[in-house]
Length: 307
Ligand SMILES: [Zn+2]
Image (cartoon, rainbow, N blue to C red):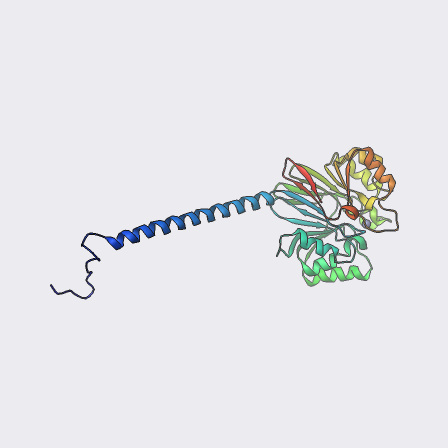
């Protein structure tokens, strides 16, 4: 019978022997198993990466940035929202520390806080504002006639960053985490000493209470200590000045961990008086001048300090 175009011919060998089909089936089976295995391994890897990433994103992180004689703290709330409190003096230290603290490629900070317009707190924010996309800028509303303060304001205005004035009672909320301003309760324009009008924040997240005292005077401490009560983490006021961190304040707040942000200075910070008072309440003390970059991590049950 004449073969027609496109008609299948018999397989090699005896009809029905199915040599090639069997070999292909065998190869298909091996390749199929291999592909399946690779696929399952890939799924497992993705699952592990997602689990690790979501576990680390669910932690609370507080980074104390080594910016010399000045303050700068980066809070990473569970879920990933970021709040930067102050930026240290006008150097690139804060930017460098932020680059190290934030995941690579992240060039945004949700909220930047300036506790008061003194150079050792806002100087580094100029470069932060130029380099990072900022969601909102929070301050106590005071300004300064320093040229670098005008530079900061210009950088914020050029980038159309929303600027918000905070006072006692105002808060930042993200899921079940809150940052509440406990001070200033006075009109900042009415004070003679700027340190009486600083923004003080209480953070409540992951079963952890932290107080960020900026350069608060002991008068401010008197006002906030009853509201705050006992805390886990205390950012010591005014780089360890003897005029802050009063005995009463430290005995009321009884921090487990105390952090002093300090660098080379001519004021004698941190003062022996404050170090002695901290020793008396049994707080574990960390200092950015000695310990460098310090991180507090809480997963809700364990609070640990990494340096
Ligand atoms: Zn200061």
